[in-house]
Image 1: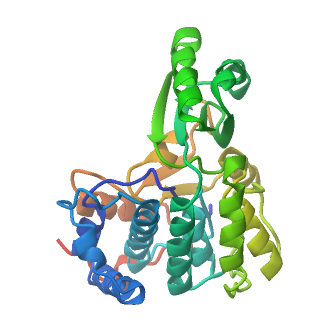
Image 2: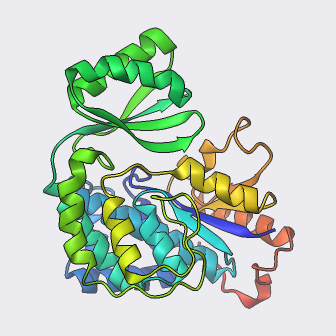
Length: 332
């Protein structure tokens, strides 16, 4: 019964998430200070709940979500919760790379900073999530809306949830048509950049130049990239660069990745490690019904919630979970 950590993407954010995570652990406080020193900026001040501009740029969005995912991970690992596998949706793949040992935290943080800067310089566009709808039902609606501009399905997140990116006018028309013809809701999740769409290819090419300077390591745990949706054995430096650069402008195969893991380990325990519960909620009664799943975040009482998650994972008597007397207590 392996544990699988799932790291969410940049839509999994809200003001104050980093502040509360720092309050829960002295280790998190140290990590945030290390990140501030490395980037030469006061991240705690920038991500204060009162700063209305904390997510104004894509660079700040990516840094904030990457850090939140990492601090949630630290909380679990401080309590002795280890995972046998992990994977990350879009930006979350960078947390996956750290977790499996392909990159140290510091190098990944610097890479995410450069990734965000490249996104901010990229072409403009928008993204929307469509749910609940099968891809074959959604495609005719998108084809009609493409009369107003380019649209592409860029995230295949579950059998009934898909993300579309492209021209804002065409996307608005697709949302209208989806409501009129399919009786489903399309929700704008990004108003500035069409991530994972082909129009973002120049961004991927720019980011590739930076990736070629990064020293990737042979991971200690399996590498499961978004681009392929299956595990890659002994990935090379060149493969890391290719997958992470083309990842910028090609679709995210999240559904394929989860299906791959569940086919290999039907008894896997899935734990979302990050803010909100997007990945946790994708697993519904019509997709991997009955899977044991947990989320780490709670807007009401994060401390109590994480303690409950840790207790539940320990109760499963999983080999990846250490006993409570070996671990420090979370801070109130």
